Image (cartoon, rainbow, N blue to C red; front, side, top):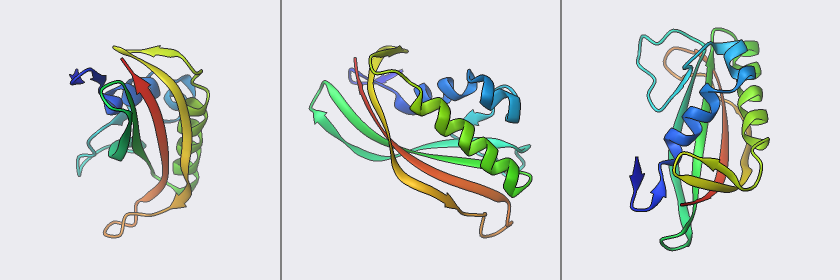
Length: 134
């Protein structure tokens, strides 16, 4: 699915993480999604779009994405966010994905320990900027 001519970056990152062996080893198949149901079985990864800018309007986009790695323990959540980070930073410039091309992936925010404020469930956060074009 695309918005205009730019690929859906959330679904691109979800697919990329769900195909990563290091992520699968920790969280199993299909651990990443854009939703986190209240009764989700952990570990899980939630991807959300948090803005960004059109680097070249109608062609090159620079969306920001947040990654939340949820685990049954602080250690498991850390291992999962680390696997996500390694997977994304290993994407080569010019990688073909879905209907587009990723030209760069850059970690934008540092690692944050942020357990859920209501349930105290273990969670780490990271933010990335991804440059993508059709």
